[in-house]
Image 1 (cartoon, rainbow, N blue to C red):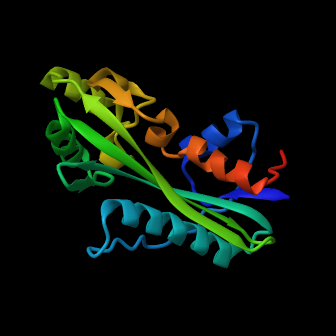
Image 2: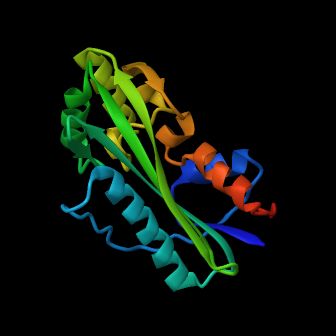
Length: 193
């Protein structure tokens, strides 16, 4: 059985590779539909499902399709990917000295066995009261681009963070521990490619 990753995120692929999986990447460009009627938790699960569905419709894969969506939430504000450096600076300053939630919704769809799972995980990240010099040094790296909340815990942003609770993989963008619980329960066989 093949396994597929409905994401162009190199971080998600690296997580799966580190577990000995080599998924076929089948990311399909689509507009992520965020609903004001849904909570942040519901939205990240909905968008993960949308990503999986878009990839299935475009590529017609035979096997297990994995999709995920990560959202940063602080004081009931959702911080998505920054549009530019100024937006990233504003996000990071808003999180400075505070703890925020990182939500990663995921969707597993087996196109041959005809089952679907949609769920999410939550971790907490506390930012230090970093200096403006530390912030600008981080922004100079460009790592804020294409990351929810303008940072990736596995990169230079680690210098801005004081602690975290929960799954590190969830914070990076793929809650593999929670996903593995389902694989175990369903006795899903994931072949290495």
